[in-house]
Image (cartoon, rainbow, N blue to C red):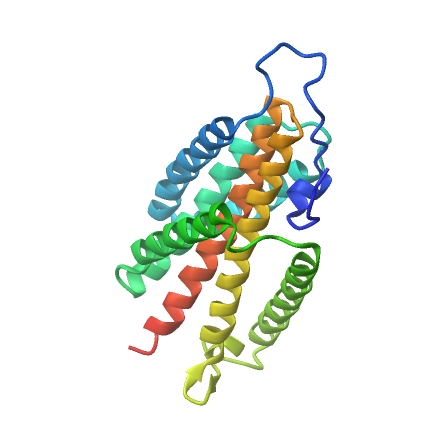
Length: 245
């Protein structure tokens, strides 16, 4: 079970030990790395297809979301479903990235580089022990995430009903000359970065607990969920900033 109670993927997972199984079948960091790399490769393939077919954005979003829920609540991890989630999320990311990159050339590459940079910083902070996921900080993260979701829903409703007619809704409102979306985006990126540290803590806990090797797929899925969120927040922030050019 989850040590921090942060990422819902880890919260619902049952990291049973490999007791009674064949020697050498306990989960390792290398297992998690290879599974995550496989998920990223499938996501990249989906992203290329989505980039070339932006009309499939809704399909990728809805199916990816559905597969995400299935993987979260499924009692036994299913590698094919985890890879399918990665592919459809890639389809959605590729479609939205291609659309925004056509409007703001280079923004997609910048978002990829930004995601990699935040990931590396989070990993360094975790490995060096500079930042740790404590129960108090994780609770704060959960409350902040709930607040972000509520803000996003309100923004969506205001835009859908025509109350706000600019392309970014509440995000486009300027406060002291700064788009509100830029402030919210920066906070969201910081939250996603800390969420990665929470995920690293969960992976560390699973490995030290002697979790079965099959649960490396659960860890890879958890990391993918956070990385997708992080990429979308960086892409949104960069697009908002570029819209003022």
